Image (cartoon, rainbow, N blue to C red; front, top):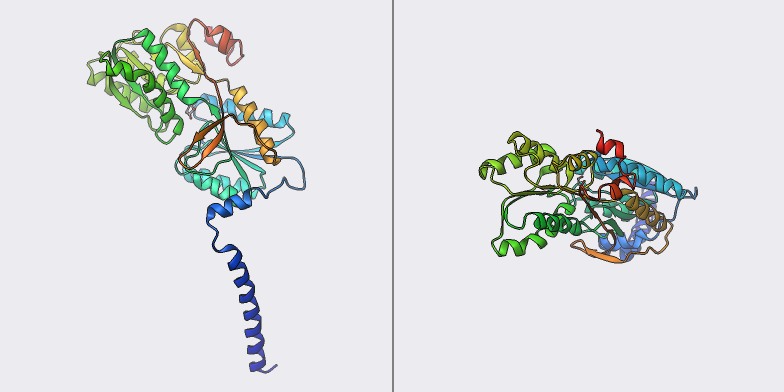
Length: 359
Ligand code: GAL
């Protein structure tokens, strides 16, 4: 075949190809990533093997509760006939994104995410939606993203319950606030709840918050150092401490112990960790906020399977995540102190009586 004929054929083939692309351009090039996301996301049906497969992308297992979430969520999903693949990012935002890519390429039908960094996790949602997979935010919301559903506890109520109990106990004086991790939207909501209650006391001059610090990565050692700094800056004259969870409360109480103040200054926490329950019965911690993880895992599992099956999902609240009004399910937290620890966390089997009273 002589060159001119070959060239001609080549031109024709290329022209045909460009023509084809030209058509596609017309149809798709003007669509933004969001439009693509939205368009694709409703397309994926469960794979030929009808077993629904859920991808559970967790931030960490550092805090005691997450081990419970991991096992109880798996149990609830398996009870519904679904299977689950779980990956833990160990407080590494980039690793969480690459783990999600793996879950997507492993063919999950739905992604359930506990984001490490609420601000950067939006990339996870975009990747999932581009693959036609919906996203359920578990316990912590993903900011600025088109997430499909949020299931958690009412985190603002957590802070309000803490502060209501503490202001009943200490209506006047110097308070220290040991916040959670600024990377976690829950820490922001819990703090908002605390100050919803404290503000009127502050405005009246009854209460002064003499120290207020976030705790990087919710790390108890950071909380311990911050509490030492608060004590030193105030000559150990502190009347109450509100800590965003029991792990940070443990760091606070370690610092109080070093100053001989353990059990003398009321301390509030969250999560009903075993160590906190033991501290409450021995009197070195005043209260915690109990969040029945079984209930959260059950609500999330039921809705995850419905979402993955393309069914409509019931959600009676909406939370604005900076981009959309996210359909949400928020469970009620429960305050726990020495007076009701038996009929709450022990009766529920969250911890055994033996573990709490006879460590
Ligand atoms: C929050 C969660 C708390 C606490 C914390 C540390 O998002 O709501 O229960 O444990 O993370 O992991």
